[in-house]
Image 1 (cartoon, rainbow, N blue to C red):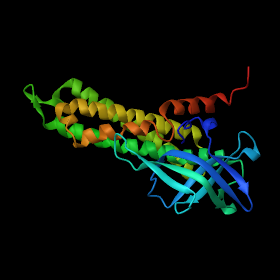
Image 2: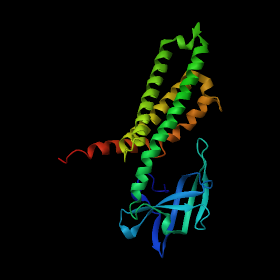
Image 3: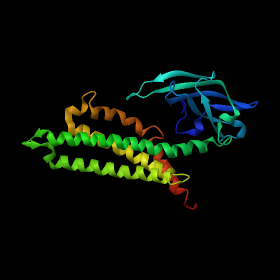
Image 4: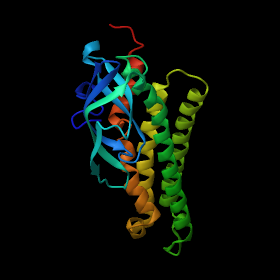
Length: 257
């Protein structure tokens, strides 16, 4: 990502130009996970000499003199994020990943792997939220019994369980296809990421509602989950981007009218 380029790859401004037996990278990247912690970075750049839509992926060592961590980003839920600057950052020819100008393929292929893992993380969050809700409603006394005796509570718990199992099936399908050797799982990965993160947000919100005041006590499991889930609907492609990806994979198979 860059300040003016995230899901819109066309907005990328960081460049790589050939120089002798290597390349020189210039630009700035932000929202970088593990900035200042990682030993290596994979940097995506424009390669103007190969055309307007040509990109390259480069491995840059953290100790490279042309790479600096210029800022930290504090977020709703703690996560090591930062901004890095590339100033005449020189890398060797062997730093290029894949073919020159074909870096976008590397990026999209990587997303096929990481999007289901984000869905898997969301699935874990949702399962913990359901566990907390079940434990609370089964023991919280109210209206002459426990909360779990109330039909509206039971209905909410049932909906939470259905959403969790549907998320699991989508995540497992994407992982199974990738493990089975599928070259691309763009559609399945996007579906897993979209549904699991959106469902987890709803499940966790339901858990907060069922716990009542206890659900918003700072530092409690459900309160932490409520803060932590939000970012998952954004990174590795926001939910609306996933919808566009899914629709695009279906429409590209249709003959033009």
